[in-house]
Length: 117
Image 1 (spheres, rainbow, N blue to C red):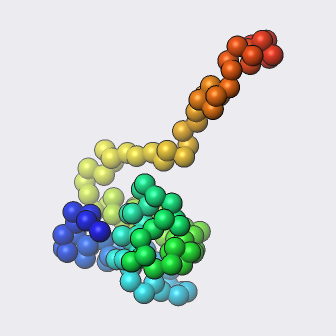
Image 2 (tube, helix red, strand yellow; image 1 turned 90 degrees about the horizontal axis):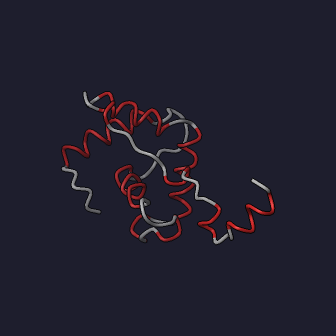
């Protein structure tokens, strides 16, 4: 996958990721491939991941397990500590954006008369 990251960048990211992993439990086989799989999810579903990442369910299970023990929070905190301007970078997850009822095709006139808003 083309992430525009150099091998030097990857070395730093992988060191930080491995330092964020729990001491116990199964270790991943290929951390870089796993992180590339996570990066590929920005516009596809789990099931639609390219086969080169392995079985989608295996990738999801690892993600789920690591998420539950807080690995990604630690990972991003450590990465942010490496960058002096990290506090200026913000992002949001589109899953928290709520659409108005009319976006789902609801008739606003019938809603306003029914609820007397």
